[in-house]
Length: 128
Image 1: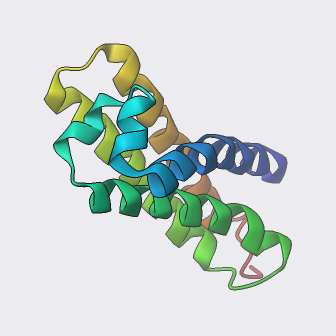
Image 2 (image 1 turned 30 degrees about the horizontal axis):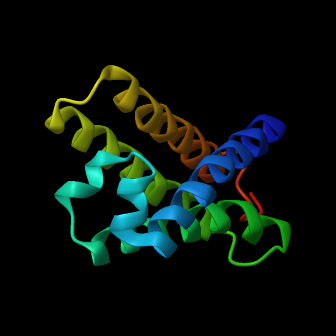
């Protein structure tokens, strides 16, 4: 199960880091240029903040356990990624976007939920 949780964490980071980099570093303009119309509903500073949260959350669930630093941060970061994924799915539903635009963030939310539950349970890094 621990290996499955690591695969889930790597999948989250593989999606959230590049996506977050576009949002954080290119802002609203770059996000819109990348074809992500949801950014129309937000100010530039909010798009950048979402991107920063994606990067920080995904790096926290991936890097902190590798260096044995603040073990409780992993479920907290996973919970944050759940909020980001769920919020993104909600925004796409509210906008009336195609189902494909809703599916990916909803799936990311479920993967983050699995990491959250797994890392507060038997496979936590807190030394159960």
